[in-house]
Length: 471
Image (tube, rainbow, N blue to C red):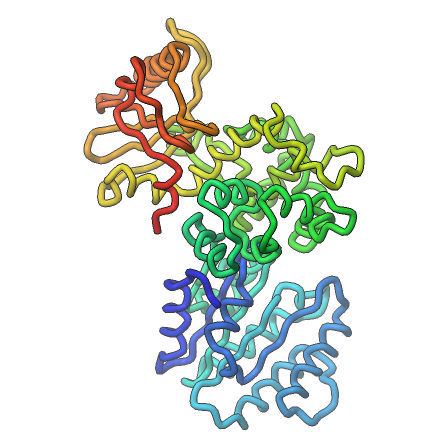
């Protein structure tokens, strides 16, 4: 059963029903469900399906392609080059009687091995044969998003502007994870779904690994800490499968994992020791395109001082509890509940989840139809105020700014005098530095609601976990 993905499926069917040949690229983070989406959408409608091999030579890739050709009726010898291989694919498709010929090439980036001349042959297949017809739907897919962006979308040769449908596949939202949980009969309530989301993010493959009848804590012990845990090597495999020289990428996410609000480019260079050359910019771009980090501007600045922030939930969980773990306690997570480290992680992770559900937050504030931008903001101490940091600033076109404070707790959150003092300091520093003339309001986003006491009247609007589950 396919959960969500309505817009993506609509785009695929639009391409299928077109009266022209169409070139579709489906891309996104590893394990996000790209292949499943295409397979579930088209079922047995493929005229040709092929998947590239990981870490293989040109000879192995060509043999694998030849075997796929044979599955669809090809009788000839193994092609000697990619030019020959795609020529034979064209001949094979020409003989197919289907009105719409769906060609799905999965893990395309893996096929582009060094000195293989794969890309020119692929370009020629589309430009010289497929695009001249009106019956071809070519779908490419790959977890190496940076390759697709660089070699296909930003291609300066034969593939320039050739992709007719770009379908970025994003992780599930909390709403979609709830639908998935119900489909698998996991029996989780929303609080438990949110806790699972804090570690797994909205990655369908991870959620598929959860076991019915076990609590979230028991599932985590089984997934991450058991002797035969299926996620034991996920971190190494994840980055190695996506990036060449993965050690540079890992250094960057490690550095960003130590600073919840993110770092500037110069701060990342200083903390990683990586040469800040042109290659460094590509590392950041690759991580952003693959969904591991995000780049966002600081309020009041268009580009200067932009921050990079680690937003991949699994990577954050790995650095918090797995990377430096000693011992072999198979019940590690169950024993960790309510420890100081666990509570700190919950607070930081809840903030990340909020940042991943900005659309739902705007719906909850009834400003979905209002033009607005979301920023972060921070300042050093000075001018009569302490240093301050705000992770979510919603700058609205109706002359209001929401300063959002996110708090995770087991029960209703009770504001204290210190909380209010801290918020007032943030507002004072924000108004002083930005010189804004808009109304500045406090918004609290909590896991279990806000206890109404003598301090809660200082809050202008509040949202709860339930609001993040909006569709």
